[in-house]
Image 1: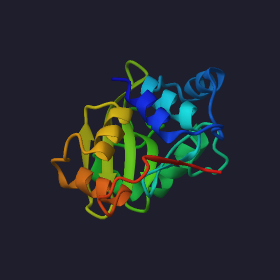
Image 2: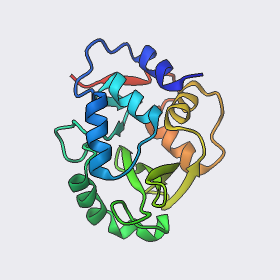
Image 3: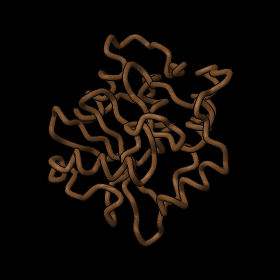
Length: 183
């Protein structure tokens, strides 16, 4: 199943704003020095800027707001602001060698990252950090599958970090739209 395509189809975004093109992704990956996962790029290009559930915003290389932008400068600022959570993650933040790459935030408490693999210049597992619970967990699933399965209740999260993230995104338990476009 192509989870990114399913999310894009269910979002029904006619004219996504700040939807990166192939050339935008190539420039972004060159600037970052990392190859980003295909489902992440497909998802952002297909829906543009907006939110998943009640509060999850994913970083985008075309975003106007530095907090939403995926570029070295914005990520360096993030790393500086979040330095106090370094011991929870037990690694540094990108652009530090081997640091985690912030890809999204869910309100004030949830953060999504990709582990970076310096030797291959690629990203690895998805990492979920919960600031209020002062903990993190990693997930083997690609981002689009992770979001789709959280939203559709295909699998109930087994750890408190992911359960809390799901509650932050869909607090009433009712299945709201998976994605709402920014206008």
